[in-house]
Image 1: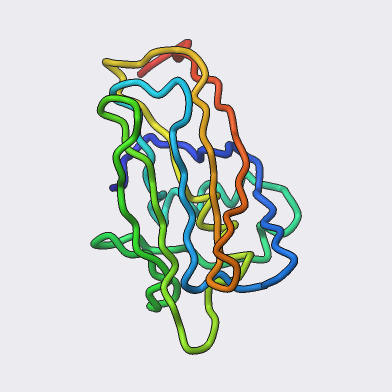
Image 2: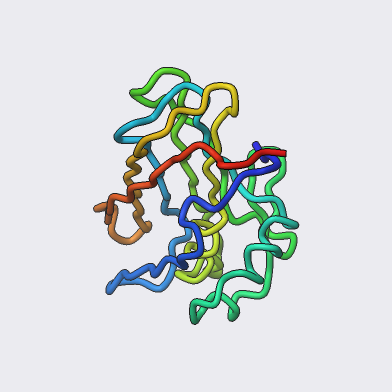
Length: 169
């Protein structure tokens, strides 16, 4: 699901993926869950290639510019240079009418899903909410990631402050 007007869940921050036992995440997964404050009309999605290009121009964090490609989201799959890299699913949240985002990385004979690609995918996740149902407040997300070699998940929490716009138009 891609929607106009979405912004990167992480804002202008570029995530750092640290996993001491592997460089590759093929066969693993990334789960982004609403764990606090989710309200009806909140949703997560994947940026369009155009949104990724615009965001790339705003981010000055070292490392982001070293990932020149955009990911394509089509028919529930993510593609990089024509290669399927992940399957995207929306899963039920504990909050009414809010869905979590589950990204399962494709398994390849030769590894494709690097830490840098996972960071780029995470940076391409957007948060938006329905304007008619906008509720100011904090949204708390838990990110969980695992690789095929070590199924124990790494996880972290992230808090997003949501405010009503000062101007619309």
